[in-house]
Structure formats: C-alpha cells, structure tokens
Amino acid sequence: MKALISVSDKTGIVEFARNLQELGIEIISTGGTHKTLEKANIKVTGISEVTGFPECLDGRVKTLHPNIHAGLLAIRSNPEHMTQLDELNIDTIDIVAVNLYPFKQTILKENVTRQEAIENIDIGGPTMLRSAAKNYQDVSVIVDPCDYDKVINELKENKEVSLDTKFYLCSKVFEHTAHYDSLIAAYMKKERNDYDLPQTITMTYEKVQDMRYGENPHQKAAFYKEVSNNKGLLSSAVQLHGKELSFNNINDTNGALELLKEFDEPTAVACKHSNPCGVGTAESIHEAYTKAFNADPTSIFGGIVVFNREIDEKTAYEINKIFVEIIVAPSYSEKALEILKSKKNIRLLALKDILTKQDENAYDLKKVAGGILVQTIDSKLIPGNEEIKSVTIKKPTEQEQMDLLTAWKIVKHTKSNAITIVKNGQSIGIGPGQVNRIWACKQAIEHAIEFLGSESLKGAVLASDAFFPFPDCVEEAAKAGITAVIQPGGSLNDNLSIEVCDKNNISMIFTNMRHFKH
Image (cartoon, rainbow, N blue to C red; front, side):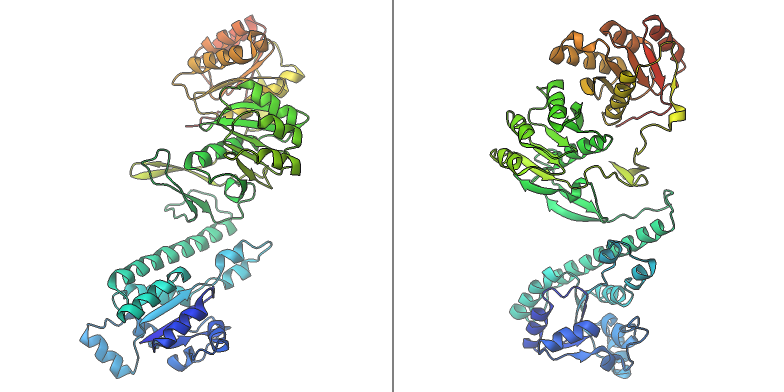
C-alpha cells in the first residue's frame, strides 16, 4: 500500500505517518511535509521520484501529474484500468492525507494584498482530494486531522479501511472543497466591490457549537459563524461566566446588540424574545440601565441586557437584584465581574468592539420551505437628513427631536407591527408584533401607564415602523398626551393623521423610510 501526504496543517501528521510506516505502508510526500516527516526520522519518498518531474514554478506545480492522478483514479476492480497502470508503470495510491493552503487565514490577516491571497489558493491539493474522493471505494482520503486515528485503528484491526468509513471521508472532502471554493469566490466578489445579489448563491459557515436543542427541545440545533473578522458581532464575544448559550439566547441577544449599535451615548437595552422591552440612554451607564429597567421591570426578568460601556460596580449591584439570563458589555470592572459572578446561572459575555456594525452589504437570510429569502441588511436608519420633513404646524422641540430619533431607532428593531414611545431618553412603552397597528399603539400606551403612570405620557413621543393607514393611532396618542410623532409617511390617508396632529398641537415628521421587521 502507498500513502500520499501533503498537508498545510501539520497537526498530528508525524504520529499518523509513523503509524502508517509501522503498518508497512510506503509514504510519498511533498515540500514542507516531506521535510517535517524526514526530520522525525520517517522514511519518505519525494513526489518528484514518483512523477519523474521536479517541483517547479515556486511550488505551484508538484502533484499535477498522471503518475499521481492515475494512481488515485484507477478502479482496482476494472481489469482495463489495472492493465493500463502496468503498461504505464504507475503504482496505485491507497491513502491520501491532504489539507489545503491557508486561504482563510491569509485573507483574515490585516492589510493582506490580493497577490498574497492569490498565492494561497491551492490547486494541486483540491485536485488530489477530488480524484481520491471520486474513487472512494479504493482510496481512503483524509482532509481532517481528527480522522487520522479512525483510519489507523481500522487498518490495525482489519488491515483495511471499511467502505462506510471511506464514504464518510469522501463526503467530508467535498464539504471541505466546497467551503474552500466558497471562500475564494466570496473574496473575489468583495475585491471587485460587487454587491449585487448573484444569480446563484453559495455561502459557507463554520460551526461554533452544537446546542442542546433549538427553539424547542424536540428540534436539533447548532451555531455557525461567518468566515470574517466578526468584529463587534456576537460570534466573536468571549463568554466569561455561565452555561453555554442556547439557540434562543443567541437569537435574542443578536437582536438586542443590533439595536444597541444604533446608539453612541451610554445605553442599555433589555430584550425579551427578540424584542426590546426597555431602552435607556443617559450620561452614565448606571443611569441608562435604571431607565431601561424602570421602562418594564416585569419583562426584563429572565431577559437579556446589553450595554455599550463598561459595567461598573454600581451597575452590577443593581443588575444582581433581579434574575437576567445574559449580560453583554465591552468590558467589566474587576469588582463588577466579582458581583455578577456570584450568581451561578447568569451568562456574562465580553464583546470588545461592541459598537462595530456589520458591513452594510451583508446578507440577511430567512429560510422558507424549499428555499431561502435573501436581502441586504437593514443598515440605514434614515435616508438622509434632507429627506426628513416636518409636516405639521407645530415643529418638534429640541428634546422631542432627540427622543424622536431614539424612538425611531427602537422601532426599527422591534417586530412589526410596532409602536414605540419614548420620553427623555427612555422607552416608556413598546408595542411589538401586532397584526394591526392600532393594537400595537394601544399596547404601548397601556404599558407606559402600567409601569410609569399616565403622567409619563405627557410630552412623550411616538414612533411607528410604517405609515398610518388611518388616523386612529394619532388619535390615541393625542388622548394620551403625546406631543410628537415620527413615521415613514406615504399613506393615501396621510392628510387625516396630519389633521389630527394639527388639531391637537402635535408635531409630526416623515422619514420617507419604513422599517418592517418580520
């Protein structure tokens, strides 16, 4: 038997080769792998001895030769194939251990040049892998160092690798090469600044962890991450304390973080079931948290709270008065971490670049039966200052303008139909995910009254994620004492809502941009 070994990732390769040698298997190798094995006193045949041709073009051509690929592709049970090998004096190759040039690691380096990336596109490696995998009945092909022991154990026990194992290894090869080619294609697309939705779409993700279950205990689940630097994204957070995150934890936390990224000032966002339940902005993170908590002290229980500033001792002490599932912040003071870790079940995550936003050309995916819906992310808040216009007699005050912007940020990240009410940098009422807009409006008003009293609504502002088809929401806002409204505009009945505003001394501004979130 013969084995061909050519690996970029040399994890476990010396031990694997030594085991092959002890089993009497001849080893063929290339370049750096050849040197590594020779240094470990393992007998190796150089690739040029097999091909009869020197490695050339700075190593670009090593294994692209009939003596290699005929030895991999010959079907052992086909007499004509075997006769041709004899006539051509070519030996079969029975085991292949290959992993590829580090293209991913190269493109993730800072300031990598296009030429560096190009030079780390492997040609011979994928070709050998595909040849060996196509002929899996006769060739054991290993692309993952985790499978070395499996192959060695079967060789020791049975003097051969089982067909089931060979087919398993074959499937891993095509997963690996598909992943590799997807990375290259995505890099090329980005280099061309091509952000159009492609005719065909191939994406690749890497598993972060298996999960106990999905949304419900009877559903299997895992968490995968994109191959990128992932700065500021949940997939790059460092967990400092607590159990592994669940499927729902990750989904809900991601929603909270995306809302948090809208704010530059000290902000706390409390989230439950992917919807914000309390948002506070202030001069200190402690005051911001207090506002977020008081906005809805019921829903925050068992929820997720994210912060865009370091958590200090004072804030940690307040957080520990209730049970929350997850805290995410850029950092924690030493004392704050000590206080929060006193609770066994809280999950603490540190996310250094928490304000870094996704690339605005990133894709948002939604699975439907038999396909996926693909769109670019909702990266904009408003289309531009020139697009915002006041449409009422009364113009918003400076404080109302600030609160209107805060309310608009919150409603953007609240499930539709959505209404949010804000006063002095605090969400005081949120109505998410209703099947009609008036229910969302009434719910937001009722929540404000329940937790903060009816007086909290006097001088508050209201945001709607889409236009008002009828004036009923504005009428409810007027009755509650709300004094300013922000909405996209664009309804055939806009004039009816404007009339109600003018009649009740309410200012209204149009953004000319809606934010449905389904």
